[in-house]
Image (tube, rainbow, N blue to C red):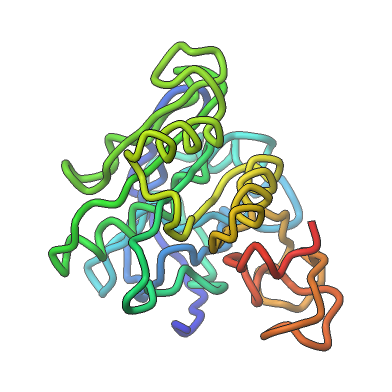
Amino acid sequence: MRPMQVGMHRLLAVEALGADNWVLRLEGPFEAALPGQFCMLSLAEGWPVLLPRPFSYLDLEPGARGLATFLVKVVGPGTRALVEAPPGTPVRVTGPLGRGFPEPAAGTPEPVCIAGGVGLAPFLLWARARQRVGAAPLPLLYGGATAAAIVGQDQFPAGAQDWHLSTDDGSLGFHGNVLELYRSLAAAGRVDGRAPVLCCGPDPMMHAVARDCAEAGRPCLVSLETWMACGYGVCNGCSVGVHDRGRLAGRRWAKACVHGPVFDAAELDW
């Protein structure tokens, strides 16, 4: 686990991706972080809501001269304030927080990544980590309601992922949801249907993917997008129901911010 830092960072740029999705670029210094970890962000002045907002790292260059980027979907006044802030605005950052995706166990099949919406964010750090060690690109299945909702691919370096896209209305890629895309690819032998699945996106999507994996006896890790207030385990606002076993033995509830946001899907009481 990387140490948590609290600091003020300068907003370098805000890039529009479409469909009210944006990339925030913040000046360092930043600590290294694992794929799936997150930060709590808020403006230093003029913040229109009480609490900061959680965002997974999209990209990260650690160090004193580094920077970090975050994928933001505008859903309310807090996210709106972040994307409308001018360059140079001070942004309060607390992180890295939470439990990220672990390294694949030796001798296990390479995982398949499944993302929906801003759930794409954790997979860029994963792709960069694999590129650094010369590993082959992993299949990344990315779904949205329409073509306009499929954003952020251009943030990934060329060849970092093996992309497979789906839209509910058939306007881009496979016509259907991302779980249907996964089943189609597995049936055709284009992805390994026995491989572990890494998943991040809306709760109903992750629940459906987790149920499919459980029925097939396939490992599945999910990165929850639970609402959070503090981000480091004080407020209990992000509690999720869990099964009383394994690393969570003795618990009926876990905190997504410290026990997650990445969970083994079998740990969760959906």
